[in-house]
Every structure is written in structure tokens, then in C-alpha cells.
Amino acid sequence: MKNYITHLEFIIAILSISLLLFSSCDSKNNKHIQPSKETMDSGTVEVYYEDTYSDVLENNFKEYNKSYPKATLVPQKANARNVLAHLLSGKTRVAILGRDNLPDEDSLMSLYNVEPYYKMELANDALVFFTNVDFPIDTLNDEIIFKVLTENKKFTSFLPKLETEPELAIAHQNSSEYGNLINLAAKRKEIKRYINLLPNSDSVLSFVKHNPNAIGICYLSQVQGEFFKLLRIGYTDTTGKYIKATKPVHQSYVIMGEYPFKTTLRLYLLEDRKNLPFWFGVFLEKEAISVKTYEKARLIPCYAKYHLEDWRKQ
Image (tube, rainbow, N blue to C red; front, side, top):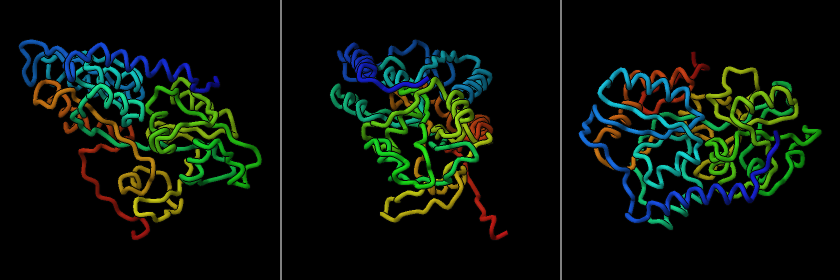
């Protein structure tokens, strides 16, 4: 399936958020109605969570239910755009997604005077560019990616080893993968490049597998361990120094801050209060069984200590 993000689709996405916000603008934040008789480990809490990370989150939801049988968890799975819309409108007290706000969402928050939310960082990941193993290049850099995405330049004009222009593929425009492509690779600029927008990351992996001239874009946790080539990315760091694309794409370099497209899976709370949603968030953030679940899913738990050794010195 090949799609552009059309002007109509963009308008529909913005209107859906605007309508949710408008419906709740009678009060400053329109707090979700809080259930009665709620304690730190009993009551009812509804959580909207992103479908991209549904497997790992649902495993931790099951563990939470086992640990706190008096608490009733009501999970609602949705795409990243929809999850954030429910939070912005005050329709949920807890939201979990793997990207920061997009530029239009920041504008809506300012327009409707929505204050920032309390955040808990659960795990890190990385947005990666991958190909079949016999693809003619091994590296890219952030400036080439930026120009290809935002100025509709061609990879072939920068990379002479490419005989034909590669196709790009990523999950649909409401996914957090696409949102992170805008925020990180396109530096919050409009994407003008033609991209194959597919239903999910599995579709992206399949597309690349069957297309020798494709570059797929997804999360490191989604593609690591599969038989693909992860393109190393050169980039300019915050000091203005150019970092060559010499290091492999791996969680260890993400931890060390030596990969440019690091992402974060966060839990957002509507209220900055130590209520049931807060303690539910603490369970997902810090509980040992939750941290182990992130590790098994090839994510990088934020609530963990790492001891990294240089294998070359061994």
C-alpha cells in the first residue's frame, strides 16, 4: 500500500483534536471525573496507550492486575495521535506513548491554554533506518535525511553508490514512528518526501524484506534480531561537532548518547497528584518486573543502571 499524508487527512487529524479540546474548554484543564472511593491501590483507572508498544505494555498491565487486585485497570488501545488527543482534552487521566508533541499539538495546547502534564519516563528506544543486507550503502547522515525529507531531494544526488532512488517505508501518519520522524529526522519541519505509509511496523519489515531497493524506518526494538542491515547515522552533536557514522546501531550507543534519533516511551498524568494513576505509573516506571519486561522487549528501561565496557579493551 502506498500513501501520501494528504491535506485532507491532516485537517481531519487536527480537527479531531480540536473538537476534543473544544468540548472540554469550559474549565482550564477539564479534569476527568475521578472515581469515588479511590486509594493508592484500589479504585478504577482508565489508561489510553499506544498500539505500537501494545505487547510490552499489556504484559505489564497483567502484572499490575496480579499485584493490585483491588484496582480495576481499563486499558484503551489507540494510535499515538488519538492517545494524545484524549489526554489533551482531559478525557483520560493516564496516557502512554512513544513520542513528544508534534508542532500542531503544541500550538493547540497554547491555543486552549492546556498546561503541561506530569511525565514518567518508562523506556528508551531509537528510530532507525534499515535495509536488506546487500543494499549498496551502510551509512547515512542526519543532514542528507533532513534534506530528503523536507526539501524532497534525492538520495542519489548525495550517494553515488545508489544507482536508483530508494523507496522509504514507515508506519502510518498517526503512529509514533511517523511522529518521531517529524520531530527528530525532519527537525519538526513539514515532510515533503513521498513515503510508503503502512499499517504497522510488521508491514514495514515485510515491505523491506520483499523490496531490495527500500529503506524502512521503525524502532530499534522492532527490527533488532531480524535479518536486516541497520544503517549507521553520522550527525552533528549539540556542540556543533560532526560525529562520523562509525559505530553500529545498538542500545549501548543509545544509552551513551551516541545515536542521534533516541526516542522515549512516556507515561503522562493529567494531574500532578499522588493518586491511583500516579501509583499505577510508578509500577510501570520502577517496579522490577516492569523493568525486566522492557529489557526482554529490547527496550532500554529508564529506571535502571548500566555498566558498559569497551570490548576492545578485553
